[in-house]
Length: 138
Length: 142
Image (cartoon, rainbow over all chains, first blue to last red; front, side, top):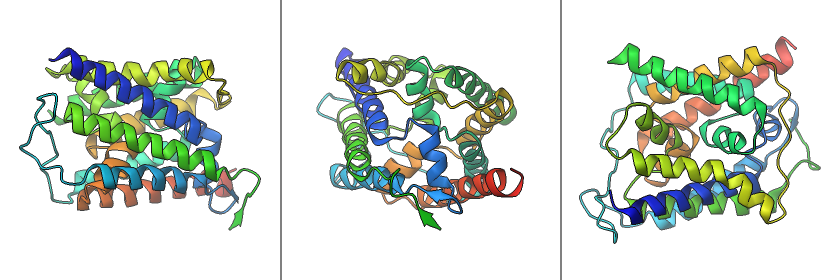
């Protein structure tokens, strides 16, 4: 493990977290207002996703599996291509949880760092859910 | 559908989204990894060999509010949600993201940017489930 890679990971996480805070995604009330199509709808999250996607589409250009980065790290890209039952079922369960609390993994960890009590319980339950998946599927 | 124009924050949401985009590009092009938060955390639970890299990414997320406050940012409020719904939501998000191999970041940003059909299917599924769940909790049983 190169120290530079660890430093890049920290910087990426930090930038990601600041982006979540600036965008409003770290506020579950705003996320739920986006998901509430039948209520007072806040379309802001379309722009969060659109902004992130526009930058990533440009920045990912020309990235090929099998290459290495300037830090000498292998480029690790997902290899699965088939849309299967696990992918869809898992994503539906995730979306139900997201709609229940307005929290997904990134914002939950940012809120944990902000010392917000709701995040501590949510993150503990999320880790338990991940551990449960590991127990059930291996 | 009625748009809440007072709550709409186009500039900060677009700028924050762009920062997220820069973060995932830096992580892929330098660290060689997809910045999918559920995958990063899931690998920590499974004690993956590259755990220091994963832990550093998570540490960056956790430290972000401190940096944000130092630059005059305002933290979002506590959600005020009860523990049963937080507990259920956390379990669903943890189990679901591992079963579905990703979350909002891994599928919704990185996967779509890679034009992955799997990520498109996953994103449509979790968005649909999110819309449906809020409809049920706010308009059917509220």
